[in-house]
Length: 173
Image (tube, rainbow, N blue to C red; front, top):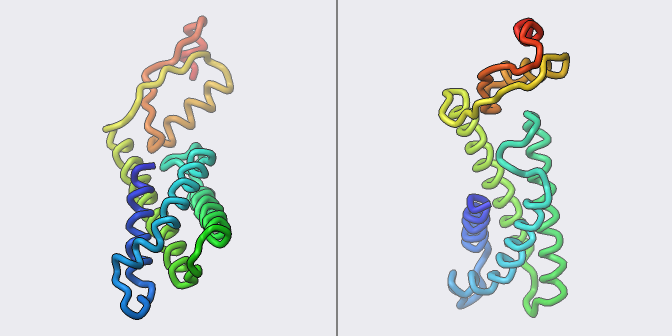
């Protein structure tokens, strides 16, 4: 979540920089004008990200589902932010700012999370962050679990043994 906040702040700075300045307006003036957008968006993003399956490593491996969760959270936060700012802001909403901020947040968060995800998976494949797992029971479900843990090393589990009340059955797996 901290990485997301840094990404959102970077997108905010970029969006303020890209947005056209008014006559006699400085970068600092424009940044102060859009601070409420940043605060509302950060609050909504944190609530949305904590409520959804948007962690760097999710249970499944599907990158499309992962990107979809992130896009949905960004869209939700951006839409509510626009509605709140339209209702309570004394200033006109800048489409240029909103578009560049939304696209920037989405791009930067997807990039940072993808890189973090690849880094975590790489570390797990090298055994740097792996956890030891003991499979309890020697049945079909145990066999499926064992197969999953062995073939998907990037999940970060190293099987250390199989425990069953019948040693012969445990050896068959």
